[in-house]
Image (cartoon, rainbow, N blue to C red; front, side, top):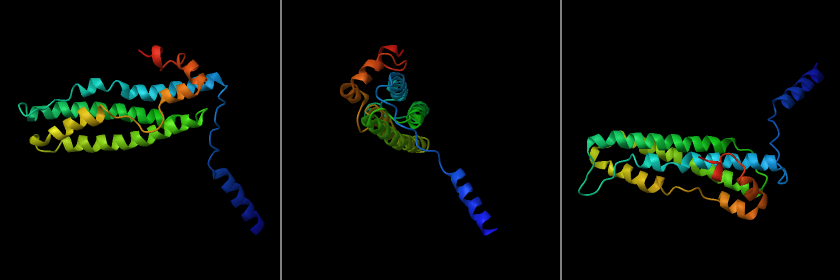
Length: 182
């Protein structure tokens, strides 16, 4: 009886273990490298067009202070920006191992920095909906500075293109990259 119970526990534990991590694709496997680069480009593209949403945010000056009607435009811009950054985060979270160590660093930096920035966007959006109208300049400045100049830490795809010739080669073929992107 005791032996059966031990065997049952061992079998149950083995069946409950997590799956092994995905293996790193070979740098010579061009279809795998192309697919990986394409995912990175898709993640980057999700926030590349943020200028459209940024342009919807009102701009304030001493001669043009915020008014209540500006709140809706600011909320709209922040909501669109939050959706863009959240989409990018979702894409980067789904990217598997890179054929190159520097590629894993690139993905990890985007995952970390996007998670932090989406949280910040949530905070600014919530704040925008409740602050007095005179304080709307703060969220507007966040849009025109922090959002416009957001850039993840860590290596960039351009760095990987320079370091790995196969990445430069497949970049032109990946549907979400470079000249293929519309």
